[in-house]
Image 1: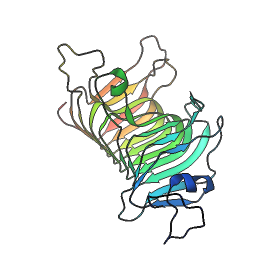
Image 2: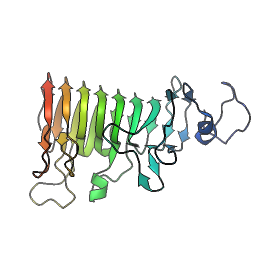
Image 3: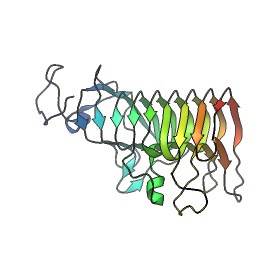
Image 4: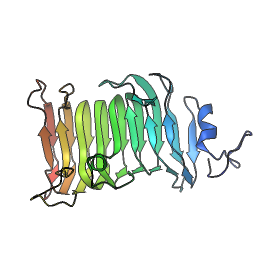
Length: 275
């Protein structure tokens, strides 16, 4: 793809289609969409109700040497309602994003099998001043399985990554310059967080008399969700580097009324700097 007006005829590598809206209805499992420099609109993948998106991987990839920008990525929103929210997810996405600049984040609900690799992901500000703003997450997912986030720069946001699900791999990312939390997990299981660089999270508000929207600025938060339904279990944190946070390097929490507890959380070979 290249930035420009919609083309309706069959295209070639020398004369590519020029909009996502033109090519997306034609995609099938196994296809690769190569994006050249330009600013593209959103990638919103929603089906009526809860239905599979693809049966095999569909990849959106930056062309060699290119830095394409997409507005946002959204999986699983239907008629103003969230769909597919169970810990394991309820539908197959099979979507992979490589080398993209995502200006206003990725949000996924109940999607299995998706990956973000070597992307730059941000959220549009502001990231302070209200509860809504300081809860914005650059990469957020609610339920799902077989999720990979690797080699990405995640910055200019309130929360870096926020999620729940099974078999999550968060590997080798640089998560920095946010206002609320680097990594916030409320219900992931059988997962690996390895080789990440988490640093510089601070809402800029003094602790003596903070406003109601102010947050601690923790680098890793592990929590039982407010409903007391999903827990973190069998999660390994390995060889991560954490420093420069207003709050804690690691914080574990949950509602006192919940019977569930975080279970089998392993930290090995991490480096903890000043917080």
